[in-house]
Image (tube, rainbow, N blue to C red):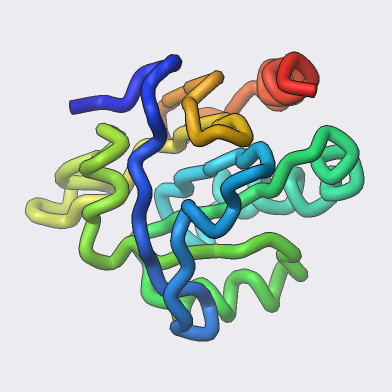
Length: 156
């Protein structure tokens, strides 16, 4: 079932690029931009991740922490983060539990039978853990950064 605006954001624990467990609950008390990326090293995901990187000061000013999630391994994610100097946590949902919990799974991604990735999706989660903004687009599309920023500005 998909997570909707006004609902509590499901918690998860996923490995980061250093293979250390990170939970959504560790960001409690701050706003979170939870970004689901279809795949590391893909053109659209790299553009989006770099846009978040380049706007880090703006998100900090809005009291928000960006957290990225892909189904890729922590090893691939680390290479992607290093290659693009990504400064926010990238977490591995290799078991696909988080994308299922948030309702953003994309089965048979790229026409590959049995390979599940995620839609490109954003959830803005407020300090109390409630989803305040949701955007899900096709993997080939880009998210609306202006709408994300407006949602965050409304949480100040």
